[in-house]
Length: 149
Image 1 (cartoon, rainbow, N blue to C red):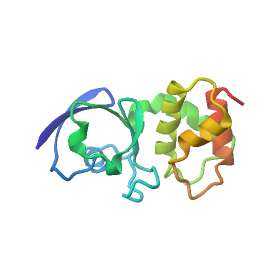
Image 2: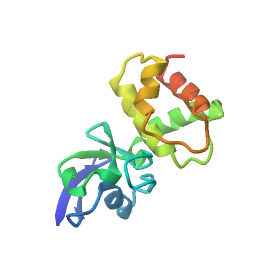
Image 3: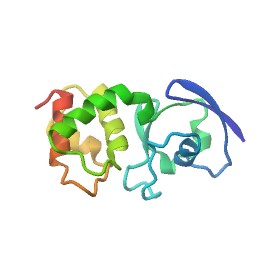
Image 4: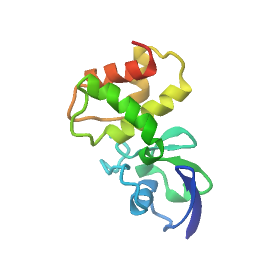
């Protein structure tokens, strides 16, 4: 089946099967920031934005993406670099596998929440599993990025 979707503000026509998930479709079309993790919607590594909301793409059928606006880390490069520097400055950079999903989730949060509390930040990023860190340095960087130190 041929579907049309907008990825990072570019209209794309992609061929999918009925059982394809968005994570596979995006990776097959060159968006390598979309990571494969658990394929069970538990780690968050596959997070993308669908209409500006974080979505676990490993459980989102590609056919549901038709006509939707999809954003991957490639589409938020400049904003992700700003956020990334805050996290690096706090020593929160480890292997980087979870970074694309954490960055997209944080960018979406910044656009949605004004002056969030630490508890709200923790709740919002809760679905992004990082096996390398204890989240403290990442949280400090995110709070600085959000302007809520």
